[in-house]
Length: 448
Image 1 (cartoon, one colour):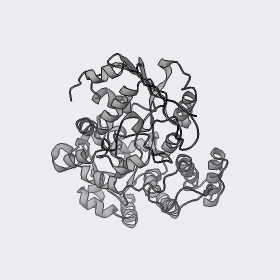
Image 2: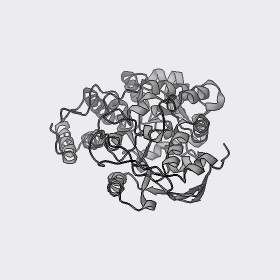
Image 3: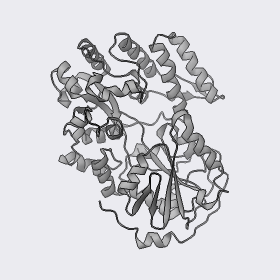
Image 4: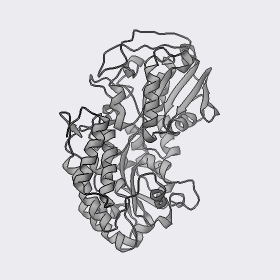
């Protein structure tokens, strides 16, 4: 879509000022009114990587890139503050800045910031985020989105406090050449038959190992298990390890011991070798954002660059991640903030552009139906396969009833502790104890 200048209506509205009362910036499910104004000259956006910046640069009408972290929309300067998530640096920086938000100078106020599913509730259950209704964004504006993407960013009073352009249902992304070598076919339907349950997956893993390949890392399968649990990580202030998480431990230990899976950390150099033929790896697990951001499709010699990946649902439906845009309380760019959220997460033309240019699974039932119905959804990195019907079906099955504000700490520490067990550095009981203590160190009120 060609970029257009901002509408006269938006430019005019940016000059208006609207201020409402504001209460405390802390506490759960507060009902305090938002403080929203217009007329700001700098739009500050806080995020942890380049993803949203690239989406805005490429798809928001009227955006002009100035340099690596700055742009212009009309007369407003857009400034990105990007702090990586490593060691919780992004949240620490965001928290520190939000605490000073109310009294900050106009050009320093945060206007938009991004959150992930694992810690979204930490922010939406405070007054640091604005109800979308206070921005004039209605349920009808959001009616085409998948319901789970809204459930993640509802506060304890049911107020919607963010919106996403993504629907991150996920599946199994397999190396077609390895599939042909081990299974005799790379057809998605046939591969699905070979991995359609954990019993089938484990049978196939044994064949993969016998042929001199590895299935994947134990950390790749983690989200499939953790998204299919029967209860929350924390119940009545007690840390609870669900039976399905014990299944992940038991299954993974057997696969590691038989050399069918490895223990490489996600995003590590060894883990990344699977993106290339010499990595001799059968699969990754991931959602659509994984296609573009994780498979090195632009790199000569990568499997993705040659169209060498395939996609199927795998043993169980699940989701992984996603990025939500939240409006910051005390923004002085209310109208522009509103337009960005509506355009980037509800405009069907923009969403279809994102899907086709960025191989993303967008948060629009209509757009995904269009993409899955013809060749417009075919992806070169998947050898021309169209994954959008499976992705759309998966998005309908996402269940967030077991989401909690403790998920980030529990997921990170469980994987870390069990990694030591898989490597033979400790017993399961010792790993479990270290997990409990690590989570308790982050959340002292919890017991186990």
